Amino acid sequence: MDERELIERVWKFLRRDPRELLGFDDAQAVELKGKVVVNLDVFDEVTDWLPGMTLRDVGWKSVVMGVSDVLVKGAKPLGVMLGLGLPGELLDAVDDLFLGIREACDALGVHLWGGDTGSSNHLYVAVVAVGVTDRLIARRGAKPGDLLMVASAGEGIETPVAYGVLLKGAPLCGKAREAIRRAFRPRLVNAEFWLEIADHVTASIDDSDGFALSLHLLAESSGVRLALDRVPLSPALVECAEAWGVNPMEMALYAGGEEYSFIFTVPRESEEEVAEKAREHSVQVWKIGRVEEGAGVYLKGYGEVERRGWMHFATDQWFASLRAMRT
Image (cartoon, rainbow, N blue to C red; front, side, top):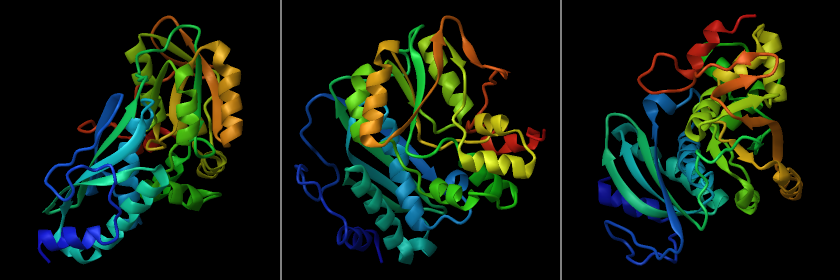
């Protein structure tokens, strides 16, 4: 099977966007109105493929990674384009990859607009996600007096559980299997809820690089201090931290990532409106603290939160933090 045959095979079960203007071409065009938000993210086999993930899971997660960064900016996601590097030994299984891509596109209400494929010595999926909005939400808009909140499609921070089992060999415990399944197929915050509260949000970031680092990035961009009263710990994390004899707060702050929950700030007077929309859309939202003048991130009863998380080329990667968690 050559590249052209692969492309024709894939499009047999993918649906094209009726808004596309060029049809089958090397580029794609759609007519858009508003501010265009574009994000490029890459799923790389070397750093992102968790043990036990299927190609179908890889397809799903690749799309979620890209779309999350568009949605969190307050933009309605519309479509994605892919750059695919595929080893020859995976060629016959490529249908599974694109099945996961299609499932994620359907779940998120976006279309696959096309892209490029090529042979590679390892798998990578580069995703360009595009959305539009009338009002952008940046990381830099948090103001002293704002409330700090987290919105999630899950029950709180739980990827440290999956990483503990899959990457560090920790024993299965409590709801670990459910946490692993959600790490393989992360879900995004309900788009309708998020876009309906967007006018209230002053700053936002998705938790893709770890909770502590994401908080620091938000604080630094806005030039403020974040004062936390709590951290949204999932039942799975609490159970497994106890079973493993580790500190659950350390685990949540430093050993997670790729939750794709949204960390955001709103004016105090918007709290009830956000809570009402959350109830209406069955979205889990936590009020975790407030924005103050100053710098850094601090947690009540814990102290200063270190600036640690996932960073390529750095030795302090999220799963390495498990070494220091013994209580």
